[in-house]
Amino acid sequence: MDEKKTNPLSEADVTAEESEEKVDRAAELRMKLRRLPVAAMRLFREYKRNARAHAKESIGGIALGVAAYLLGSCRLLFGASPLGLALLCASPKKILWILAGLAASAFTLPENAFIYIFAYVTAAAVRILARLLIDVPAGSGATISGKGRAVELRRRSQAAFTESIYLRMATGAAGAFIIGIFNIIVSELEYYSLFGAVFSMLTVPVAVFVYAGCFEENRVDKRFRELAVGALIVSVTYALRDMYFVGISAGAFFAFFVT
Image 1 (cartoon, rainbow, N blue to C red):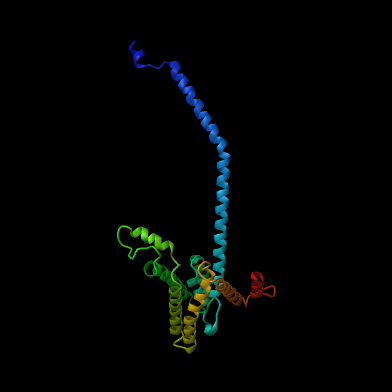
Image 2 (image 1 turned 90 degrees about the vertical axis):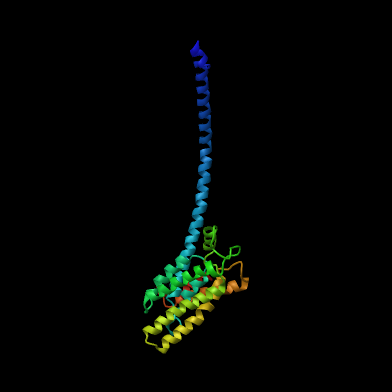
């Protein structure tokens, strides 16, 4: 009698409950299996969409890297090569791709490649610091101290390379100054190197101002953006002037292809 009181459910009741649980689990499993193809299709579509976006981003980065290589190796008056540095300071995105192209182009120049690389890396670092400390994003605090320091730093770092166009122009001129001073010292104060340094320091800010119009789609006039894109195309075409493929000028082929 005591055992019956302590076990109010009979074996038949327990067996019935277990059977109901098994039926419920089987029904739930069938439902999940039915939903599996739909979930798999949804994941596949999302993966395909992300893959296209990543491929588009990669193609854009490669294109800017190639453009940076060509502009970085392009020599103008007095042997100066200011266009690659101008592209680096003008672009608000794909900076690593541009740096890679400029680093490769530095080894095509007769001067010391590492001073060019040093100037390019310094310009990129100055742009980051300018965004963090000088031209802070809208809505950011005046300082980056206190409890919200990590959040504020993250917010500003996400807006890196989008500083004022005037700061970009100043950064470009500073980078040209570094390269020019080095070339003047190495050449033992030759007038040719001095003129090249002055020419670069004057050319880079102007080129930065023009090239920036290619990337500021929503912040510049449509006509100016078309002018900026045209200027960049002309610059790349000029940089390709000495390259030939099967007797055809690469510059002429590029101009025909993009127009």
